[in-house]
Length: 426
Image (cartoon, rainbow, N blue to C red; front, side, top):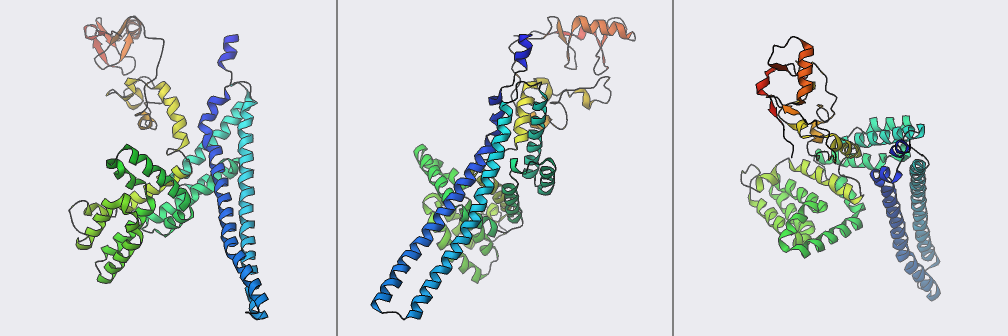
């Protein structure tokens, strides 16, 4: 009885490993919101304090008329009112993030109050988590409206990141349509965080070696977006556009010469290369497939910046269970009985199912410390393994099999007993 209770005892720590992004993202958003408040206050302070001193000195020295002084004060008041409106908006955002964090903490705290896996409260908690994983998967797949409806129906809007993924998907769609404005605006809003991340990567790669700096190009989203703008200007083959492209390169590309020198040299060569060229790397640079590359790069940069997993949480959760069930036969040349129309049995193996087979392909095989294989195991010519005594008993019970032959109970195939081979497990 004690062993049974131990087996169903709930270990909350092992459950919340998957839920780290649940608290990490609101924390990152709250920190960003605070940084926005700090920047706004400092920017207005740098303007207002000197302007106020200047107006006071001018008033005392009679270098300005009263009307000019009042106009200067009105301008300062106008800026302060604008700052107040912005601060109110940021305060509302902070309250929303705090409320979201509170509900997420309560959701995770509820797990620590559940004593065992058999408790009905655990079923309810697991259902909420499943709904969260489904919403996350739909958001990453681009089904924003369906995800929103499911979140509203289940009342879990504060437990999922609708706004973050909706914004991400909107920018991705713009990139796939050949527009960089939204993505560049996002880069501008997150310039400090991107710059900090870029500096860290540059330092790390330099410590490894100068040759590995090539990998840095794939992570510099803003540079790649500016490079694409340059490519579109060059693609037109208009002399005026080429002059604009040169000015664009001097303003946005040359500043990255230290880390992107190779790409800048290639960009310079595009001025004398036609868009229909077959020479690499110019063929790839002129290709419209670069828009898909940019959208994928944006998703990767967006998720890294917000500490979001690169894969849907549903896939991560499924992978753990799939790995525990996976065997070499699941991806062998001999398919499961579920794909065999002549089968006399139905496979219940989720690894062999059409829906999950590809997802489980890269998962490690299950590790069993104790073998459950019977000692008289044999393998049939079709690759299936059975207990010899059980297989002979089944063949006798069927009755339609001739002496000296056995029937595969799964596929219905008939083989000679001499075709059976002994299985040796090392």
